[in-house]
Length: 448
Image (cartoon, rainbow, N blue to C red; front, side):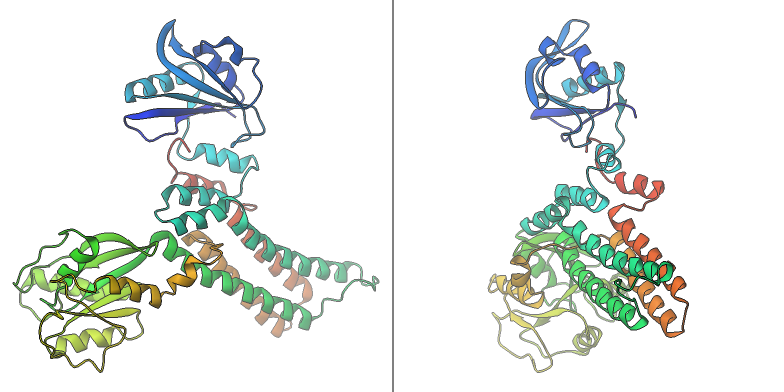
């Protein structure tokens, strides 16, 4: 396998930059451009001072860390060059490494090598990317649980349960004379499959919570024109993100912003006011608003404190049936005229006076049990790939149960269970295809 190099710190001016090298020729290549001659025979995990040079000309004053295989991230010989953070200097050092025998690392190649060399599994690799991209303490904790293998253990436990069933069936088939081995009867298989399904359903349910922590709650602000949707967005964000006027139809397309409430991300979308209109552009905005209701995790339904519910309000209310929504009763600085019997999860605010805006966050916490989430273990399996595999596993388990009901031969049941075991292995990478790895690690930055 070739020796690779890449810049591991963000591009730009900074105090330091780190250039990482990994592979069997890492030490020899770095030695060619490093002035400290003690580096060659130095022990592992030591730091050395010197200069990077090009044909005797000093390029930068550096600290070089030497790490011998296998006790490195990639399990290969690894060098990290800590240079001053100038763009030109950093690029020059990388250029020298490439000139002297390194290949430029592709996105995620260091992490890919860690996986291929058995240092981490796929869920741990995905956790590394999540840790890099995490925006809240909870998201960081959840990603760290992936990196440290706690999430992998959830899947390994499921595979162990299946392996136990498969092994018993095989022994029963091949060695029926062994009386001290548990006989895996149809009823026992069904019982064990029922327990397996419960565990999978629990993991899938928790994964939905995990996705909220990881990517945030898609929150759409809905209401008819001039109820104060844009003003509420601006108050929540703390800046004039959306244009606010007294003219109906000012907001014709969605305006997006992101805030953090109780360590949970809210991805806010302010939408066009919902009403009947002859204006072509505005009507497109209204259609988009109605569509966003279906796509949202949460809807902030804004109504006027000083007006009775209109036909448009009631139309929106009917569309919210079965959705997570909070009714934001705005303009409490005016006289009360609203008929509120039909409204649920009400929060009374005045966007004009900035009164009670924080109560919206309190209601979000209550609706999504965020206080409970914040104190939870946060060992959740996340990601569309993993959830899709688990859903496929769940369906396959149900198919096995149906096959048992239809008197499938026990050896056929055993084959189906082995296929499910392999499916679960795709989550951790114990079973994988090269195309999957290429796609997965291409999402990483070059130096990781």
